[in-house]
Image (tube, rainbow, N blue to C red; front, side, top):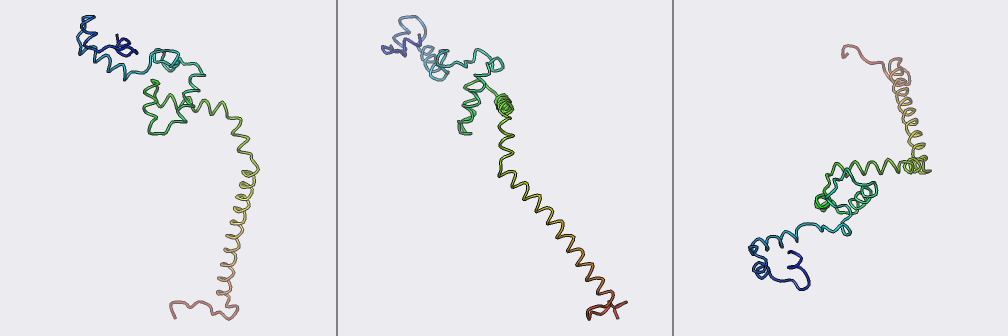
Length: 161
């Protein structure tokens, strides 16, 4: 009946009401709800809500993850509702995809730039340790000189005299 009201030669809800014997407000409500609901045609909506997401094929899950990555964050909620998903399911599937593609991460980690950065950081840590050691030795040398009265410095006074 909704198709008869929507089709190219659609008729009004009141005309259809008289023809089929269903109240006009009911037909109008059905028409309004038909605009809100997602398409029921499986060709247009392969991941329809007749199957729960945990029964989707891996291709459908991958497609959902790809679509979600291309959607702005403010539109993600509407996407999840339209697909009948929870954000936790999508996050789990995203991690599965990352794990499956994990071999590429190791290669990226060992890039020449990353190696050079690690070497420079290691070198910097060693130099910082050496600098701290030299600073400590200089401080001790100065204290010893003061205690021994070398280089024209006077020994510290006792009891403030």
